[in-house]
Image (cartoon, rainbow, N blue to C red; front, side):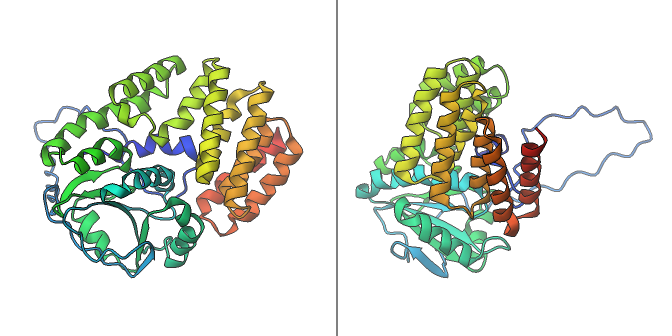
Length: 374
C-alpha cells in the first residue's frame, strides 16, 4: 500500500520541510525503456523485496518503552479493548499535524475502550529530552498516552517487520489483540469506528483501502491545477467519504484555492473556523497553516490582517524559540505590507533557527533575504 506517498504532496501545505524529515517516494511513473541491442546483455533482475513478517491479522508485538511519558503504561494489550499505536518523531511535521485530530478521536472513543499511544524511538534528531519536552508542552492538551524508547527494538518489531519506513504510521490493535490495520493515521476516521463496532474485516478491508488512498492522491494532485477544479475534486471526495471530510492536510490547500477562486467570504469563514479550532486545541500548526493560506490574499486587507492574527497566535502558543512559527509571523507581516515588522521577526526567526538543521536555517535565510530585497 502507498499510504505515505501523499506526504510529499502535503508537506508544503503546512510548513517548510527540513532535511531530517522522511522522504516518501514520489508518485510512481512507468519509464519507457529504449530498445535493447541484439548483443546487449539483459539487465540483472532486481532483488525481490522481502515480504513483511508483521501483517494484518497477526498478534500485536509487545511495546518495549524506556519511559512512559504520559498516561498509564501499556504492559500488554487487553482483550476486549482497542489500541492505536502511532509511530512519530519530533522532527516529523506531518506527524504533529495529525496529533490534535487524533486527540479528538481519543476523547470521543475513550469510553468505548480505545487507547491512543504515541510511540517515539531514539534517533540522532529525536532524543528523549526532545520528546519529553514536546510531551510536557503539548501532551496534556492532546490527552493521550506517550511512550519513548532509547533503542530501536520496538520500531523494528513493528515498523520494520511490517515493511514500513515512513512516519506517521499507525497500527490499530483490535479486541483480540491482533493487528487490524496498518497505515497512515489520516484514514483512522474511516477505520477505527468499524474496528470498535466489530465490523472491520481485517485483510479484506485493507485491500479496499487501496481505492481510498488512490482517491486521496488524486485530490492532492488536483490542488496543483485550476483552483475551481481543485475545490470540486475536494468536494466530490468529501461527499464520497464523509468520514474523511476533515483530513488536516487538506486545510491549507482549500483555503488557498478559495482565495484564488475569488471566494473571499467563504475563505474568511473557513479561516475563522480553523483559527477557533487552533486556539481551542492550542495547535500552532493549524494557525500557521491559516496564516500561510491567507497570505496569498494580496490586496484584501481584512484577510491579510486575519493572517497576521493567526500567525501571532501561533507564536504565542509555540514561543519565539520556534523558528518556523516566528518565520510564519514575519511572512504574514510582509504580505500585509509591514516590511519593518517582517524584518524584525525575520531576524528573530534566524536566531531561533541557530540550533536547527542546516536545511531549515538555509530556508529561513532565503526567506529573510526577500524582506530586504523587495
